[in-house]
Image 1 (cartoon, helix red, strand yellow):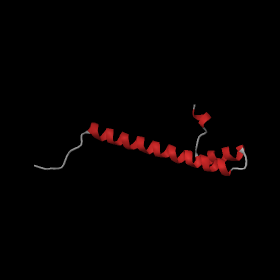
Image 2 (tube, helix red, strand yellow):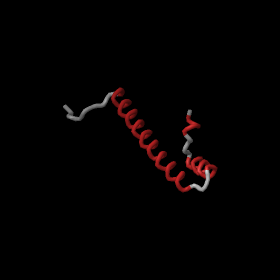
Image 3 (tube, one colour):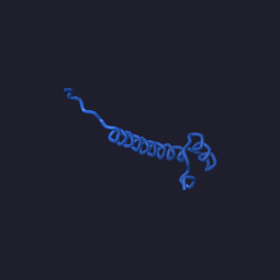
Image 4 (cartoon, one colour):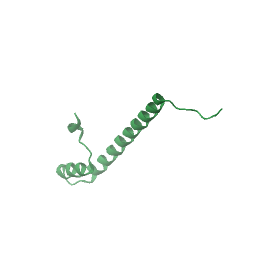
Length: 64
């Protein structure tokens, strides 16, 4: 008899869902850090907005 554990479909889905959620959380942190850096270095609000758009980072007011 094999000693390896078998992961059922439900457990596999749970594990994948957890991995996706972790990735979303890390992406959100990266986006906040990038937005802060851009905001600190941009010469104007328009330039900041354009740079964030280029990176695909949504403004907080756009997400609502």
